[in-house]
Length: 486
Image (cartoon, one colour):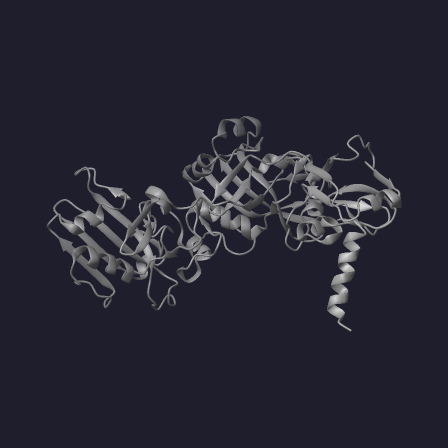
C-alpha cells in the first residue's frame, strides 16, 4: 500500500467534493464561528492557515460568524456578505443546502472579509530623541496610574488598547531608567544613574531651553511658581506609591510666588530633572514643599515607541577608498553613551537609530580606516597605525586638500571662508580605562589657513565626549566617523 499516494488522493477528492469559502481580515481582529470549527483568529490569518485561507464547506454549510476586535481596534463592517449586519454582535449567517454546495464543488467563492479600524485618537504629538518617539506628557493628562498599568502591564509595559480615548497600540510606558536616559540626553552627560535620581542646573535656563526647543511643552504651572511638565512612570515604590518624571523651571514666577506666599524667598533660577519624586497612585496629592495641591488631573504620562530611522543616502554619503562614509555632521553633539548602546563594539545594530538616522549596516570607523583613506588620497603610505598620536601637515593644496573638502565642515573657518575642520569621534584602542573597541578616539581633518592637517589621538581627556569635558567633551562641533562597505 502506498500511503503517501492515498493521502494525496484523499486531499484531492476533498477539494473536488468541497467548496472553499476563504475568510479575510483587514486591520486587527478575529472572525469567530458559532460552531467553533471555523474560527479564524488574527494570528491564523497572518500565518495563512487553512481555517482562514481555505475554510472548506462539505455538505450543508450552516454557520454564524461574528467579529471580535483586538485591543485598540473596533469592528467596522463586513465585505461581500452581510454588509447590513447590525450591532451588538454584527452576526453574519450562512445557511446553504448541501445540494447548493455540491454545485460549487472544487470552486473558491468570494471571501468573507471583516474590516477593523483603529479605535480612539492616535498620538501624533511627539518628540523624537535618537531612536525613540516620546509622546507629549499631556496626551494622557487625566489618567490614573492604575488605568495605565492595566493597558500597559508589567513586565514589558507594552501598551495595547484605548485609555481615556487615546489609542496606545505600539507605545511603551517608560520606566524610571528610561526616563533617566531621556533626561541625560538633554543634559548632555550621564548625570542620572540607575534608579530614581535627580539633577539641577542652577542659575541658567539652558537646560529648560533645550527641552522647549526640542518641542516639549508644559502640562501645568504650579501656583507655587514652577513651570513644568511631568508624568507617571511605570516604576512603583510600593503598592500605594509610584515614581513620576518631572522637568521643572523655577524662578521666572518669583513675583507671583512672593505675592501669593509672602514668606517665600526666591533662591534664583534653576532647572530640575527628577525621577525620584513619589506620588500616591490615586486621589489628590499634597506637596508641602511646593505649598501646592497636585491633582492627578495635571499629571501626564511618559510613553515612547521606536522611531523609524531615515536612511543615510545622497549628499549625506561620501564614497571613497572603496567604502561609504557618512557625513560627520549628521551626528553632532551625540553622547558616546548613546552611540555605544546603538553600536556595541562599534558595529551598529539592525534597526538602530542615531539622531534620526537608520544605522543598519554602519559601524564606527577605526583610526586605521582613516589612515588608509588619507594614504590613498596622498598616493603614498606616510601613515601607519603605530602610536597613540598621529599628525600630518600638508602645505600644498593638492589631493589631500581635495579629500578634506569631500566632507562637510563641522567647524567652518570664519576668517578664511571655504576652509574649516571636520571633527569626529572614531572607535578607539584598548587602554587602562576601557577595553578593545569600547572607547572613542578623536580624528580631525583640517583645511586650515595655510594647508591641511590630519590628526588622530586618544587619551583620558577624551574618553567621554559631550559629557562636559573641558577639552573636547562639551564641544558640540564634534561628530562621528561612520563607514560601511557598499
